Structure formats: structure tokens, C-alpha cells
Length: 465
Image (cartoon, rainbow, N blue to C red; front, side, top):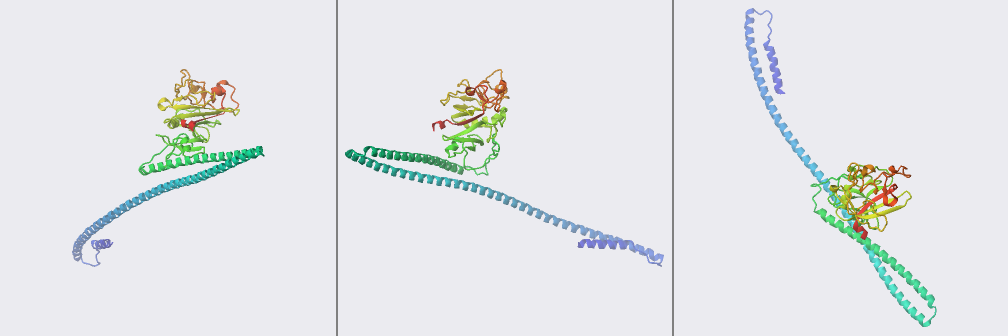
């Protein structure tokens, strides 16, 4: 600012000296001499101004250099500040992830503690029942002694023998019933205790395995559900391993039918509908009940699955194969007609993979029912799956899936099709329309559209339990 003031002052002096004015009445000679002096004075002023401008430029250069240095320092400090903020942000995110992991582990430990408490209560109940059983045995022994003494007394006296004997027999029968009830209660409690112990051992082994896994930050996996509506698309990192089928869930203590998540070996997780019975858990692979879902789908849909687990659905050939590929499984088929009569049939089966077009091999039926298989004419041959856009049936001149409707294991076009069109009662009168419906030839015939069907699978061991 000071330098600019000096420059302005010099410019004013230059203007004043460069254009001098003459006084009135001056002699011509004196005027010429003055003009000469003014001319020289203006040149000196220009030199002064030039010198000032050079000094001003120097000062400006020094000021600019100093300002550049200050700007570089400021930018360096800003970069350091940004790096510090990024590190703080990463550290905060890491702390948050560790907090979530600790919270998940704490919840798991709480569940394990609850299971241990339940197991302890069951043990106490079993011990109480065993004590009660021991007391009942002692009472029975005393009662038998009284009976013997009473019988001996009656034999010696011969009085009231018949009436007392009936009373004693009634007492003995009552005690026997009470003992039988007690033994049954003990058996049921023991079964529950065994299931809880198995579940605890499973949880403990999974917790031990989770301690050996890499941290969630170093590995993650995304999963895609099959055809279930609302299936999650992201697999949660949890110390619990998913079951491979519904029967495994049953063995872990799950006894309520409903939708669960499974993850078979070498497969992504997906949701299924489990039907829990007294014998075990069954995985539902198909359900028809009201015609709300169109089953006349192409190969890709039948391979992936479609429909809703809350209504009608097809689980998907890929998912069915993932469940049943590693062990022996039972296929349980149930169907009903419009008179509310029902039937069912069970078969041991094997299902091939994509390279065999998911060929189905049905073995000898395990039921004593006269309802024979309508899936194949030859139990020694596997039947590939067919759709209208991928004809794999054994009919050379006809595409059974296109001629009928839906995808199925067609050995020919006339034995069964539980994925056909759904007809409300009464069925259509035209025969060529009825043959496109849901039918099982060996139960209600070729041209009777069924009301409902459901297909379930479970390990073969379920029939031995």
C-alpha cells in the first residue's frame, strides 16, 4: 500500500513538470531559456519514476513469492488435515463394525445361556420324575406285601375273599396306569432333553468354528435367493451355520412349520417352506392349491423356481438337487380331489444335476398302499425333466410339455402331471382341455383334474425314526 502511494505521487509530479505554463509579460528570450530548463527537468522526473516503478515491481515480486510460500504451507496443512479426517473416519467405521460383531456374539451367548437354563430345568424335571417313579415302586412293593398278607389271611379265614380280591385288583390296575403315565412322561421329557443336548452341542461346535474363521472385514459373500418372494439378498456374517434341510432343523429343536433359510453343501442360501411332523422335518418343493400361480413356465423358471412360499410355488430344480444330492432322500406326494378325498405315496428317489437335465430315478415305493407310481413306466430308467422350450421326454413325435401344460418328468404324455393347468370345479367338459390339468392317472384317472397337490422331500432316515 505504501509503494502504491509513492507511485501515485511520482505520477502527479511528472504531469506537473511535463506541461509547464508561462507567466504573462515575460520576455521571449527568457521564455526560450525556461523551456529548455523545463525540458531537462521532465527527463529527470521520468528517471525517478522509472526507478520507482522498478522498485515497485521488485516489492511486488517479493510479496508474490511470500504469498506463494504461505499458500503452499496452507495447502500442505489442508492435505494433512484431510488425511487425519480420513483416518478418523476409517477408525470410527472399524469401531462400529467391531461393536456390531460384539453385539451379535453377545446375543448368541445369551441364546446359548437360555438353552443351558432350559436343559437344566429339564434335567431337574427328569430327576423329580425318577424320584417319583422310585417312590411309586416302593409303594407298589408295600402294596404287594399287603396283598400277599391279605390273600394269606383270606385263605385262612375264607371270608370276603371275592370282594377284597376285586378291590385289590382295581387298586393294582390303578397303580399300573399311574406308573405307565409316569413312564410315558419320563420318555417324552427324555426325548426333549436329548434334542436340547444335540442343539447345544451343535451350537458349541459352530461357535468354536466361528472363532477360527477370518474377520468379517476380510471376507464377505453375497447370496441370491431362488424363487421365494422377499428373500434376502445379502448373507449375514453369523457364527451360526445354516441347516442343509428341514429335517436337520427338526433335529436342532425346531418343531414349528414355516419358512426357514437353508444352505446345502456347496450352495448359496435360500428360503424354503418346512413342514414339521412328529417324525421329522419335510422340505416342501411344490404346492398347488388355488391356481393363483401360472405353472406353464419355461426351463429357466423351473430351474430357478417361482411362486410364493405363502401360496403356490415351485422350489426350483437347482435348489431341489442341492438339497438331495448328497444322501438318500424320500419323495412324499400328497393330492386331493374335489370330494375332499386324499391320497399319498412315498418313493425313494435320486435326482441328477443340470448335466442330466435333472433326471429323476424312482425306486420301489415304501408305502403298502395300492397307489402305484405314475412318474415312470420303468423304475430302472431315470426320466429327465421337460418344458415346452426344452423337450426331453421319451415321446419322439410329441412335445409332452407343450401338448399338455407345465414342466414335468414326462416318461410319456399320459401318466401324471402335477404342474399342469389348474381348473376350478367343475372341470371343463372338453376332453382335450381336461388332459392339460393336474392329474395322477393311477388314482383318479387320466382326465380328472385334481384339487390340490403337495410334494415334500426328507432324508430316508426319517422313515426309521
